[in-house]
Length: 191
DNA sequence: ATTTTCAAT
Image (cartoon, rainbow, N blue to C red; front, side):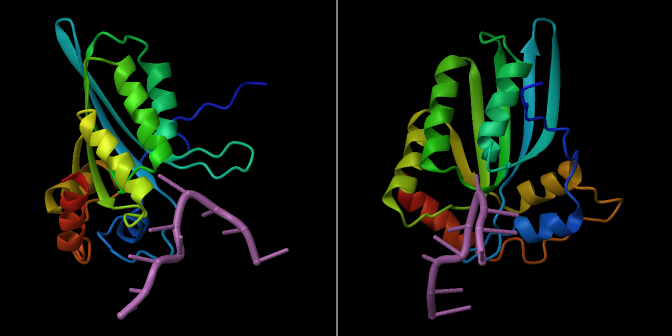
């Protein structure tokens, strides 16, 4: 039997608009958001040309193979890009910020890929009042990861690129509801 | 006003 492999193309290419509006707002109290979405973009400088890829991962909830969205990405990336010396620019748009375990795994990943830069925009801070979760974010920061709260530009970018908008124009609605709180909290954590 | 939030009685 084939080992299970996470793929950004499975089960979804893009997020449906309702899901995006429910899962992505900047909220301090985000009841019911029991999933994490990771939209990504990969740009690679490959000799004389560049290529890029994009996709959406969501955490896997199978009890026999649970996988956070970040772990799905890392596993997919290692499989997709075994060329560790090349230059990569990777951007993530996360609905929840990484847990301490994922933060550690990202730091290890960056040690493998020396020429990879990772920028993370997160909509919300996962368990931001827990010291271990704060420490995880600091480790990412110390490893050179760019960390920011998703703001209007990122929401619009995600809407345009990762959502089945079917021509519907981007509207910020409640997406930025608790942006100020979360941005201040992140500043405080990384200080 | 609150923190259940990478689900599960």
